[in-house]
Length: 436
Image (cartoon, rainbow, N blue to C red; front, top):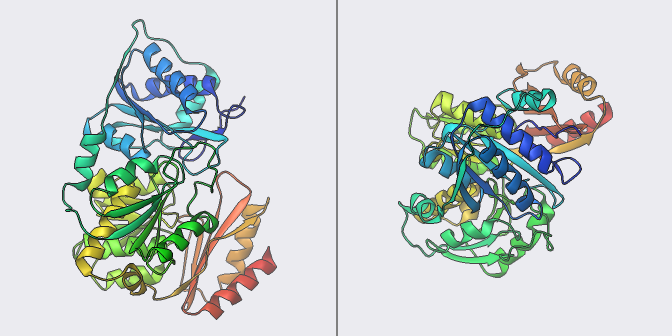
C-alpha cells in the first residue's frame, strides 16, 4: 500500500489509503526525522480519528517520547499547544475540509512549523518505504491535558464583550469549540453545533458555495452583522456580510492588512489574490509579498519577511501574533474588532475593497496539464507587462491578469482571472476554454 503523501500532509480515504499501519509507521519516521522527545497530539471528530489516534500514540510510546494528549481540538489549537508550551513536535489527526470517508495526519516541528513535501514529508515517505525505523529501548509516557482555558485566554485577551451579532456555521465538526469562545465576545448564534461525523446537512468545505447557502439565508433572516463558516478543523473560514454575500477571502486579507499592519510593514498574499488590492495597500505604504499556495509555504514566507498578516484565496488567514500560523478563529475575532471600531456594516466595509472584477476559481480536469499551461502562456504572452512562474503561471496585462496552476494531487488546472471589467474577464475565459 502506498501512503497518500500530499504537498502538506498525509491524507486519503480510510482505510484503503490511510489506516492504523500507515499512521504508526509515519509517526515512527517523524520521531526519527526530528529527534523529538516531548510531543503533543490532537484529533478531530471523524469516525476513523480514534483508531488513527491510538496508532499515533503507540508509535510515540514505542519511540520513547513523552506525550501530551489534548484530545478533541481544532488544528489551530494544536498549533497553539505546539508553540505555547514549546513542544519538540506535534501531530494533528484530521482531514480538514474533505468528505467524511477521508482522514489524515499533519506533522509539526517546534513552534508549530508544519512539515511539507520538500520540507520533511519526503523523508518520512522514504523511511516508510525503506524500513529504517527502530523502537526505543525505553517506552514513552502519556498524559492528558485540557488546553482550552489557556487557548481561550490567549485568543480573547484584548477584546471586550460587544453587541456584534454573528451567526456561526460549524458544520457538525470542530467549530463548536470556537463557537463557545465567540459567544463570550459577541451575540452569537450557532448552526449545526452538534457533532456528527456524517456531516448530514452539508459538506465541511466552506469555499463550496452550496455549503454556505443556509448560513447566507440565516444572516439575512436574523439581520445579523456577520456570518462565519468554519471548515472541519477550523484552520479556514469564509465570511458572509450582513446582506448575505460572501466576502472574498483576498478582501478579508486586505482588510486585515490595512487595519492590523502599520506603514512599512509586510503582508503576504498568495498568487491568486487580487493585484488591485495589492496596489491599494501599496498606496498605504504596506508592502505585499507574494507566496506560493499552501499552509507551510505561506507560513515560511511570513517568517522570512516578519509579515504581520497573510492570507490565501482558499480562506486561510495567518497572523504574526499566532506564531505565523493560520487560525480561522483569530480571523473572526479580528474582523469583529474591526467592525466594532469602524461602526460600519460588514457589507459597507467590504465594498471599499471591491475595486476590480475577479473570477471564481476555474477548475478544468485535464491530464496533460503542462501542455495546457504552455499553451496559455503562448496565447497570452504577447503584449504582457510581466510574466512570472512563482506559483504556476502568472501573466500580467494592462487591463487583466491570469494565474494558472496545476493541482499537485489531481488532474486539474486551477485558473484565476482579474480584470478592470466583467467583459474583459468573460473574453479571457472564452479564449482559455478554446485552448482547453
